[in-house]
Amino acid sequence: MTQKQDGRSPSGRAVVNGAASVSALRASVPSAYVAPVTDLSDLDSLDDTEMVEGYLDGFNGEPEPQGNRSRAYWHGWCNGAVDGKHREPDEAQRILASKVVGRSGERP
Image (cartoon, rainbow, N blue to C red; front, side, top):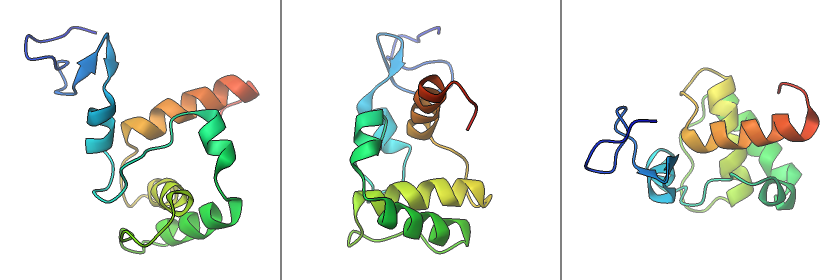
């Protein structure tokens, strides 16, 4: 990845040692969602029921959740909104997807 002098890639994303920075990842996700899931152990720790509830709401086009929702709900909502074609995947989702593929050996 080519890096500009201001610390950003040609696409405008902030980079740290060739990877997107945490602050850049946070900036790419909904405003109240401040801790994107990018690690498998983190994903495994989230409540499945809340993730499914969020996923279904996101898939069905419900509006971006407010701060009263859990991180599991947010994660589900973000993925459901992408799968429902209501938004584009963010960098955190791409990072996690590549790790899930690596763990299972299959494409999600």
